View: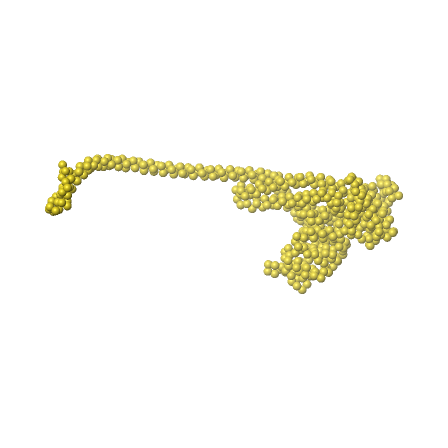
Length: 562
């Protein structure tokens, strides 16, 4: 109803103010009331609806409160169940970890058992022998120390005699010792012996014993070495350690000695006589003076610092020197005079190197490989035993030990296979080498025969180097042949004739027949055409020892000489 009035042009606040202020207020109130009425007309239903909705809200909030209470209750129950679940999962994880740990321990234990299975028998037997070895240890050490201290100056035969005498005395005094004791095997391993052989030490028993005394005796060695083999071995052995070589009459001998002492270098004094320089007395007796953390020794009128790595070697070319008891007490005198067996092996090497160079190269390579493999196995076993004894706690918990054991076992098996193959190969090579041994045997026999001629006349002296020169010449000049046996026979014949001619040139006429006879008899002995007792009977003339059983042999000897 009021809308037409409100739409009139003059019904506004500005026009009303022109007419009258009260009219303007009334106009404004009228419009306001009209607007209020229109708004209130819409708001009243909303208020009613609001009141109704607020009622519903109150009911809903009440229901919400109840639901929230139920939710809180369920949440508490859920928290309890979740805690129980987490605890169960933790226990499950712990059990799984324990199971994994148990499986690892089982795997480690299995690996440990399998890894040590190969050593079980040997270690079990060894453990049973330990107490017996301990009981016999005093006697074994007594024999070993006696050998190192006293056996050096003597030959192989007298060393064996000394050993037998010591054993008899120990039996009388009830000192237990090992019946099967081999002093060389007790004091040095086969790998070290192989290294010595590669360095030039002959592989006969006497030379190996000499090498043992040189390296294990507490006193500095003095080598009786007329053929120079011991000196050659020392030079090769100490070459990598900057060995110094000097002589007593060298003008810088004192300087060489002082430098070697202060720098810890090995020193070889060669070609000494029957007397030594007094400047060596304190060094040989090891009269070292403690100075702080170092040691000093008086050399002449000077004090020289001594390093722990210093090593002194002395050698002489005299075959039978007469040293004073003082020198025997200060040094380890060792007889390096060449033996027949040792020379035979050396000559065999020369023959093979000339006739079958590839065979000798293969043998040398094989020897190097066997030596390296044996040393590797020994190092692995030592490392394994060290780990087994030093491991803290349970062995199955130390996975690094299991890995070391696995590597050790794998490597050891490979090395053992190589050693087996090497042993078979060595048998084949040695069989091929043995075919040429008659040449070496003849050469060794001839050399020692020539050496023995010095007993006929002291002027008849022959050096090993000179003989080796004739041996090489005979190898080169002997008639060639594609047949091995024919070639061997040619070398033996040429060598025998060449050595005879070369030696006979330096003999008196009356001694040439003696040389001829001795060569004939020695060859007959070597070929077993006569027996040693028959040879001794012929040389010494003790015919009363001939029995009826030996008459046949004597007759054959007489026929051969005629």
